[in-house]
Length: 308
Length: 196
Image 1 (cartoon, rainbow over the protein chains, first blue to last red):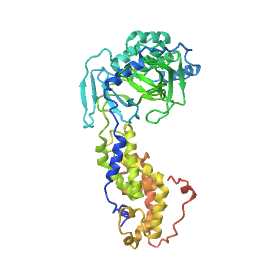
Image 2 (tube, helix red, strand yellow):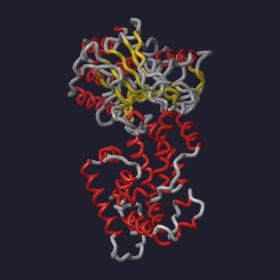
Image 3 (cartoon, each protein chain N blue to C red):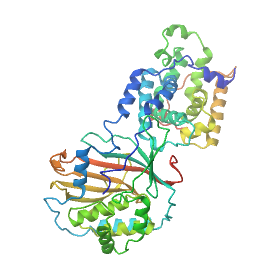
Image 4 (spheres, helix red, strand yellow):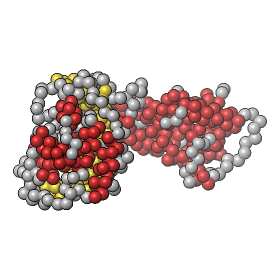
């Protein structure tokens, strides 16, 4: 009998079959408490829409421009991303994204990857139904001017002015970012973050957006920010004490890869307790991070179903 | 920002299906290495870790099996000292403490399998890396390429570790080879080292 056969037979009488308690424990730990990536519950969606950009009772006081360290870090980020080459995808290509997180009602953020493919021209969207993970459900999308397609974002970003003040003015006027209301600093921060969150942008535009972010009053850098939902370290570009429509102050963070400055997600944390979004809104407590997402993957592929 | 109102997303893969397909195999592999109780815990840890890092699984891979065995092996590494102690206890006493988690009559096994006692010694004396490769090939029935993917090693390293492990096992089992007393844990192993 050769050595490998002996090893194969060693403890070969071990029975097959994991106890059902193990299965129960695994499924309890991996089943989300609530949908994270479907449409948000109506009240929460309303709260979120209001919370992120509307005029607050407590207006953000016009503070100093972004801190010197923020300007330096964002300048480095601009230089780093400007070196990338990001050719415009073909209209029939697809943007594949894997995103974790979403809004929470106060419970932990489930680690549920939401995967989806958006056709670059915005005409179709594909994902896999949960009961048939290998199936792909492709749906045609109605043209919705309020939701720019990846192509519209790319083309609009390519036309943005390079100079920060002009770029911010163009974003305010352009109707691309959905950030009505709020102080100008909040609006500008949100608009730039929304633009940077687009998976495909011309490299120069991405660099210009970092430069513009460096001019927004109140923006700071947090190099020791909490890790993202995947536990990976991040560099946070932060706008603190930003009021929502209810006057509640929040801390908003744009999360970047600390090495490449790639967009990794956003995080919104209430700085005081109260209700976001009016009577049907979301009750939050001070210190509660009620929105967070982490982009694990964002790549251009040739067809839905491809991930590389 | 657009994030509080994201586009429709899919739900995760049906994870119960993945668990049901692979859990018994992974559990038996861990059970043979570390016994029932630890296997239960590590099987659960393996699948929860897999779920949390699902986006890192190569979707072009034919099967998630090697990936899961790689996670299981990495988790088992934290119990390396316990694994080695179990093998040495078997070699010394003829009673396999790991098998006692599934076999009822431990006494019946005392006199049996002298060869297995020597094999236990041989396995205990392998480096952790050699043991991982040998057991993934022999017990999990992974190919060299699958072991390489599971452990994030070049295929050449897998091949050389397997050859080295088999050579050591053969040497230990060779007739006429004088058996030496089971050596105590080295200082390195006691610190959790011995990464082959």
